[in-house]
Image 1 (tube, helix red, strand yellow):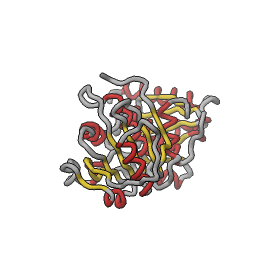
Image 2: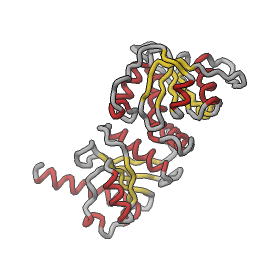
Image 3: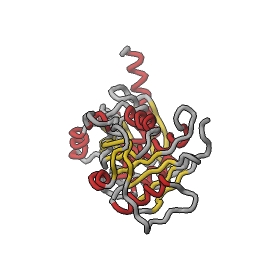
Image 4: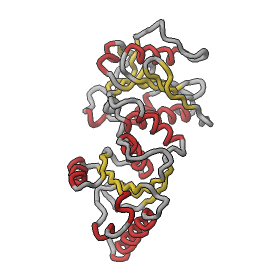
Length: 294
């Protein structure tokens, strides 16, 4: 790094900290494993607003021991906007933010200098609403996993596969019961991979799920995001479950599997691209596409 670029980065950080010190800003979310130099925080009002989002749990514990606020995010090489989203979901899950808070986010690519600043008003966008709803689903579910899968389902519904609309089911949680109440329809493309290689928090795995959505059957995903199987036929049926008129076999299967287990189920409608989230046999979140790619 040249002296001029290093000087510019220092000035960039100082300008961001000055902005974060303004009264309108409620929180400063600093998403990096390199901490802010103490001398840069000395005397600044933003110090009390600061929340670190780091990929290293020991570093987070060290910060917490010093009475700093810190959260842990996955260490995958996310794009900058996705790093911000993961950090915001974690902070929401821990009660660090409330609706209408203004959050200033500083981030960069993993292992590099902070180079990006974003402002977010919590609850003002569809992504925020989805994240907030995901957090409310219960402590047994990883809110980052649920949020990532809802966003993935929206992409599948919008983009389809090679220009053709497709539908799919993604079942999350209570995996032992779900596997007992389902059977394999096709070869499981995730069999034989290590758990680290098949976690939905990895963008590469989410891309693979989009491609495998053309397979018949459902995806079964553990609470922590590990993909156990694709192409599962959900054999659980519950005649007492009622779904709205016009919804088909995928929605009926999702309603039944969540009525008979503690799992969640996401359904992408092949007809409309809409995404519906089922819990305990009922739809708890419904998201409709504004446009579909053709």
